Structures are given as structure tokens and as C-alpha cells.
Image (tube, rainbow, N blue to C red; front, side):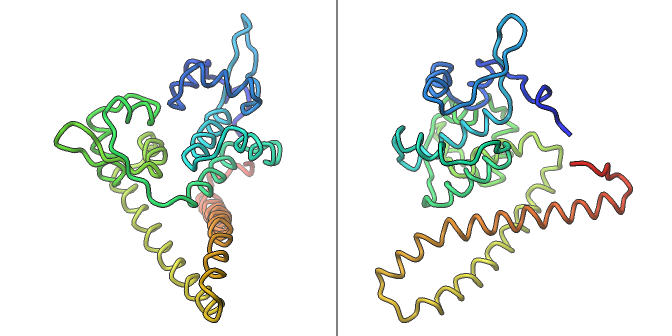
Length: 239
């Protein structure tokens, strides 16, 4: 199990670079209570961890939804205490699901700022293969903003490119099947209702359905991996 000490390894400059924001922005968010305080180490240097990175990603997503700073503060205050980086990532995924597909045209420096890291030619090729970016003839990139952070994280996953693409196809196939079945159930429920009621129900159900799917998938994957580790004799018996 990863300890807090092992996770709190980023300086404020490294945190800002990882999140794709400025140090001034990090300090501003901290002053407003949007970020928890760092762990103070030797020489009074603050150290940040993956939870800070995940929270900054959530704040960025809320901003993309057009929320004001005051609204973001209210949203974050309503979150239960002690959320893990994984929990925050789920919240961000649910928030992102509310928005329509967003494709932006970005220059290379802005793409790297959004990614929070320099991108090599190989990185760009892998992101393009995952349909995250498309290179234009003028040196700009068409970027799927909703997939960019996920795609960047996948660059560091120790799996072959072919395995990642195959996993993506599996997820897309089964998510489409689930969406078709859920859509069929909802159509049957609202068939006799007025169009305004249907739109209202859809707006309320969308984030709830996404959260339910994420939770169900998370639990199923944990069970499958647990069974695999137990069968292979590599399970440690701890989280």
C-alpha cells in the first residue's frame, strides 16, 4: 500500500507543471481553500501529492463547464472529506460527461501546457492513435479536450500500445451496448411524457447513470483483478 510519505513528493513547481497551471494559480487556489495544504518537509519546503494533482484536474474540468470560482468553491465544499485521487478522478469523469464533445484547435505550446508535460514525437503519435489529437498541416493540433488528460496518463502506463488500443475497443463496444439498453429502458418510461419533461429527466439521469456505470465497473474490475491475483498466487491480501 502506498503511504502518504511516498505520495507527497512534488514541489509546488513540479505540481504546477504536472497539472498544466502556473505556480501563481496553485497558490491562489490554496489561498481560497480549494487545495489542501502541503506536507511541510525539511527547510520548510511544501510537498504535494497525487491528491493535489487530481483536485487541480477536477477544478480545471469544472472551469471547462463554465462554472465560476464561487460555484467551484461550493462544489468542492460539498465533497466528502478524505477522497482519494481515484475518487476525485471519478468525480472529474462524471463532470466531464455532462459536457458535449469538445474539440479544440491548439498550437503545440498550448497542447503541452494542457498536457502538463513536454510531448515527444512518439507521444504525439500515440495520442493520435488513441484519437486524442489530430495533427494539422499548419502545425496545430485538433484536440479532444475530454480525452486529453486520460490519453496523457496512458502514455506512462507500462502496457503495449496494441493492448491499450484493444482495451479501448472493448470499453467502447460494451459501453455502447449498455447505452443502447439503458436508452431503450428510458424511452419506454418517457414515451407518453411531454418533450420538456423528457429533457428534464435526461438532464437529471445523465450524471447519475454515468456515476452508476463507473461505480459498477470499478467494483467489477476490482473483483476480477482480485480473483486473478489470488489464482496466480501473487495477491498480498492487502489493498
